[in-house]
Length: 268
Ligand SMILES: O=P(O)(O)OC[C@H]1O[C@H](O[C@H]2O[C@H](CO)[C@@H](O)[C@H](O)[C@H]2O)[C@H](O)[C@@H](O)[C@@H]1O
View 1: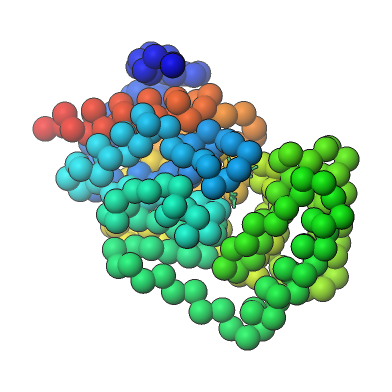
View 2: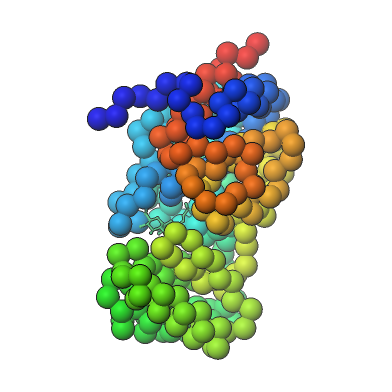
C-alpha cells in the first residue's frame, strides 16, 4: 500500500501552489468543483469499476463539512453512472454528461429531449453499435443524450478505424452533432454543453466568491477557461493545459484537497 501523501511532495512549483491555495482557503464562499475519472479516481478498464481513491473521498467529505464550502463533481459520465461510482452524499452537487444533466439540491433531474433529439439518439445508437460490432474490444456506453465509443482495450489500428468510421458515419447522418474526444473514448451528443458552462452555472448557483477546479482531460480545459484570477485551476497528469497548477495523478489531487481542507478549517 502506498504511504499517505505528505505536503511537500507536490509536483512543480510547490511554493506558489501552497501560497495560492492559502489565499483560496480564505475566500468567503468556496466552490470546489472536481472532475471524476483521472482526477479523483485512477483510470480502469471497466468504467463501472472506477472509484475515487479513499484519500480523495476523505478530503471531499471533509470539505463538505466546512461552513460556506460547496463541493461539486462535473463529469462526462451520465448522471446515473456518476451517482453509482462516486457514491457521495446528496449535498454534493452533481453534473453529468459534460453539463447536460444537473443534480443540485433537489433530487429531480430534468432532461426532456424533444422529438428530433430522440430520433437523433436512435440513429446515433444504430450507427455506433454498427461500428463497434465490426471491431474487437470497441464498445458503446449509453448516455441520456448520446453515446461514448470506448476503445481502451482495442488495438491502435482498430481504435483509429473506430474513430474515423464513427466520425464520418455519424456526421453524414446528423448535422450539428456535439463530438468530444477523451482518453480512449470518443463521445457523441445531441445536446451541446461544456464543463465550462456547467461551472459558470454552479458558480452562480452557489454564489461562490472563488472556485477550485481540478480535471485531467481535454474536456476539462473548457472549465479551466472560465476561471478568474482569484480561482485555482489544477490539472491532473500529463497533457497540454491552461490550468495554473499541475500535479501528477489522483493521489496528488487528493493531497491538494486535503491541504485545502486543513487551511480552510484553520481560518479565523
Ligand atoms: O469527465 P470524467 O469524470 O473524467 O469522465 C470522462 C469519461 O470517463 C469514463 O471513461 C474514462 O474512464 C474509464 C474508467 O477509468 C476508462 O475505462 C475510459 O477509457 C475513459 O475514457 C466514462 O466511461 C465516460 O462516460 C466519461 O465521459
